[in-house]
Length: 105
Image (cartoon, rainbow, N blue to C red):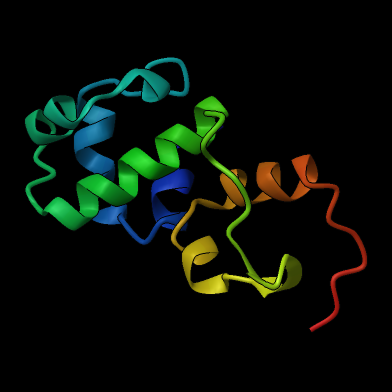
């Protein structure tokens, strides 16, 4: 996985140079903490949260699920706004884990 591509997928390409200079690769990325992100210069809390959520998705944390909307227990749609905040690889992994097929827009 290319970390720069992952950051661009999150809309956080401004941090690509810092990640590269600090040798953050696909083996280090899943272990980053909020303090690590601060050390990397991620000063905006919203950006740290976005990165931490996407990192959790990379790790495959049990709490990371495809964000869906339900009414009376029935699936009525996917929360695309929340899904869009994840990186492309995380979205692909979530879709594949959920066996999402034949999505029609």
